[in-house]
Image 1: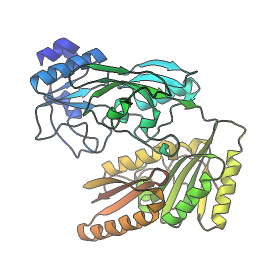
Image 2: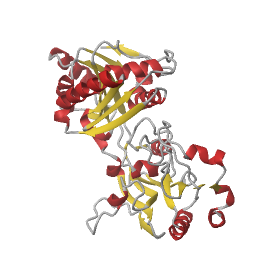
Image 3: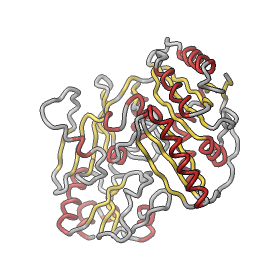
Image 4: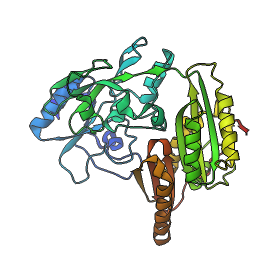
Length: 407
């Protein structure tokens, strides 16, 4: 490891077991593997040098960001080849932010929430949003092509990228940080690395697309009788004239789990319905009567039998849908015994039949193995996430503030 110490400094080559421990296990404790070292470069040139030396010595590289993933991608294989973890946490600068161009350039180690805050301070919006955004980093977000609850409106991470800087497997650097919207000059090489999880190269910086800041946001928590009713509600809100930025379908057991383990959380509705929808609408101009549109839409949905109850959030409760819900549910999973998770994809018109199939299948598994299952469906994003688990541990969360007006 002396060669790496010469390249990036001894303080950035971690070899002690205590220092390596956080990098040798995933967030849920499901995957474990001990690297020979953890390397923490501070620049693209240092990443390039590390990649060259690892190639020469036959060392596998495991890129790591905020390590919030649930599939073990940032953890070495327990019985795999000799490896080092390459953590980009020191590469955390925002190199440039151009409000007129609606773009910024951020290094891979920037925390996603830091980028969101920088954009907000400049009067712009970096729209991707999910529960782990306060820990997840830009490099990991792009390497997994992360989505989040606002994929419905702005797409996955791939749709927010204008260009990348990447260190290739032989140590060469691909500098493609051009912030050009219309570029039909050649292959869009950035798409080879987005979602590639570091297999074809290590992303060290990205040019990201920004949006106008949201002037109005309205959030609702809605009880629906079935996934089919939720699908009808989805069509109704999409035709309402407002911008729909999130539409998440959740089983009651999922909400019960959040209520049990969510510290400082109060449910906006009694958990009496088998299914719930969390939705967000937005407007980029303050004059848009967003609240009235939402109320009218929910009223019509109630008359049609698509909605059985609804609560519209006041300003201090909107963050529940936009970020806290996913984080609370994720934390709850970590407190539970044995568990396995799955993410599925299907066209959203097929969500009702798919949800019924999954629920029936999970019920059979539960009867056989003593498991309980929960699920969330990003109905507008064609995503289904299910979790089976044995045993409930952890303490119930306390109730806290969060004003909702019943409608």
